[in-house]
Length: 104
Image (cartoon, rainbow, N blue to C red):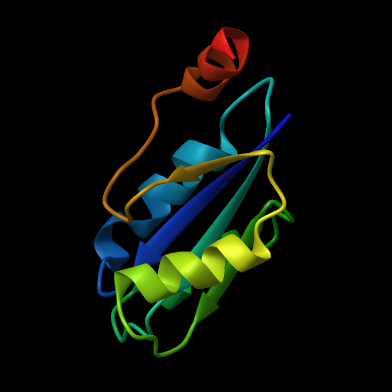
């Protein structure tokens, strides 16, 4: 079972690293994170670039038509069995996705 975490973003660079790392640090689960940034001109792209070495992170930064459009684009790239929406200013506590997987 794979979780696809979809994250729309615009101008949330100060939160980006914490949110993405909280997904990539989940243990005992297969996870990918798809970030669709609306072309932010803050620190969003540098944070995403610094984390790009992890193949579980897919991201794009380009103009979009808002949050719903960003989520639709992220969904089209996702390969997970379970889709999760995580806003850019949110994060997961350690082990939460393993608990969800066990409950499923």
